[in-house]
Image (tube, rainbow, N blue to C red; front, side, top):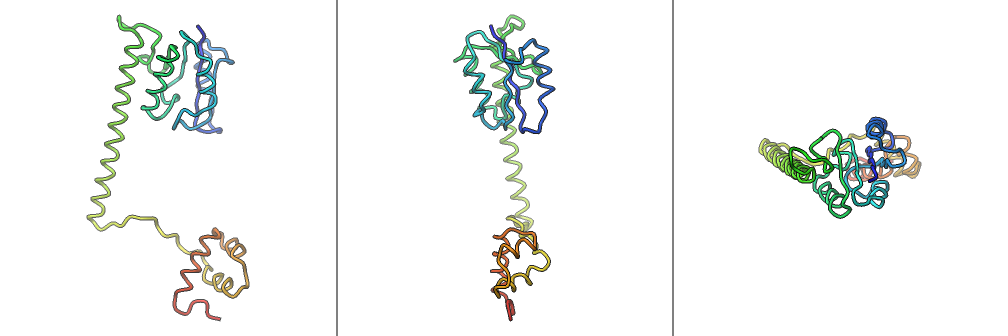
Length: 205
């Protein structure tokens, strides 16, 4: 049996030391620890996929917490099945002892207990997402009844915008030059100028 560790942080700036320390304390060789510095939104991660290819029947994958494996419980369940059913390997989650397919607990196999706990966690996560969407919808409906209008807020115009619009209209500056002076994007400057163009007394020489 080989022991492998998996570490994930969401960005390159985040520190992996805490996870690495926990895994090395479990006796995992540094060469057997795979690290991804990517979002947990899916499992298209190079080091995770590399670890999967190495797994053999009876091997053990150790992670510090279930959210290091991923964020989406439906996808976590799918990958859990890949590791435990297809690869016939085991998983151990350090901060949640019940998620441990390797050991027997009170006469129940670790696989049975872990699968059951993970199913419950997935159900709770899905229910929470449903409640959040419901609360959001109810909040929006209540706000609309009070007359609140939704939509992107229009950015305020920077000081001197009209002056530079007039200069651009007369050919004295380019869009890029004017936008740079005002500290806005080229597209925003152009849109604002077109708005001014339709106003009375705008762009008079």
